[in-house]
Image (cartoon, rainbow, N blue to C red):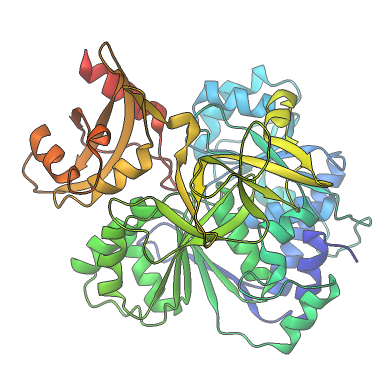
Length: 536
């Protein structure tokens, strides 16, 4: 047995076959739900795995998952892993042009998609000649070239009987594309198991052999319920689900993120561990707990973790007041590195994101790859179990991955410093850094200050070309419901209590909503477009 995700999952199934593995809750208000034990989820994944083999999908070929959250999503991922087919996440918000790019860049030969996206898939298909096998989830008019998911399941075996697998088998995670075109991060499954899944024990000692995972599950009990609330199409939620499976515990998923329904599920299912993405998801939960869902029993919640976007100090404080018994974890990681560390308690308003990193993370000079001195600015890097590179992008792979001291490293996009105690202060993504009058401003720091303003609900910051300063700092702001419209002077006065003068926004754009991905990640390209258009 190797560190292969399908092998590891099957070992857990054999240890606790009758334990509940997955609970899926459909559209809010419908009452529709599905519950599968580990044995039932395993059988369902076997059917899809055998279907892919019977359809001629070969080991190492790529299958896209163009789906909302659902049993079919995790069932298909597991089926792919069993059949040694590489699963590839597809952002379901993409329109035709973006889908054509991703389908072709990823060299997809198969696609499982929700019926709701049928028109977009059909429009993209003629431009993607390698895409030869389509499976549709949900009801839609019959199409000769498209098989329904139920048909794919019905004609396939529920038994295992798959060829031997390897820890070298791949898993591809496409990035969110918030600062450029999305890139496919190629992981060996063994590396992903240790970097993204904590080696079977994210808060403890990683397993020392593959067989130990099931041994731990068999020796332990049940009672933990994981609830990844963002879309599974983003790596964080899929990996959170697999962390739950590796523990032999229960995973709950919703079709879509609706704050009131999330809280109802927390109460009903006695959720113990929730994951989300930053303020964009935490703020609506706070509003619901203060308003229509006031009094909801959330006492079962032990931990709430965020990754992919920073939780501001203001929002963290508000949430802790409502759920004082819950531990709030502000995690730091990426599609390219997995988990790097957790924010310190003093990561607050007007301060940058401060994290205690793991032993494999350093701040290095991007040119020499040597560790920077205390207080110097460098880029965050991680060694050990890191990806193979970016799919179909040798140039970006060469820029991002390097060898040092006999180990493989990944150079992340975040600029940072390190102090005497080894605590890393993340300044922000280098690609988004604003050079204004020769000074460097990182949007994330300004956004934290903006979101501590009582009238600001959400905010993004971008650089706008300026004849005097080169670029000036622009704040794109969404106000709280019922809030009075602040002036630029009001915002500047508030920010001066948190930020140096050169970081203060020189432009304020009020927008009805801030555009983010469904998981809450920032769309900086959109923010800059809005700010530039308003400055004309």
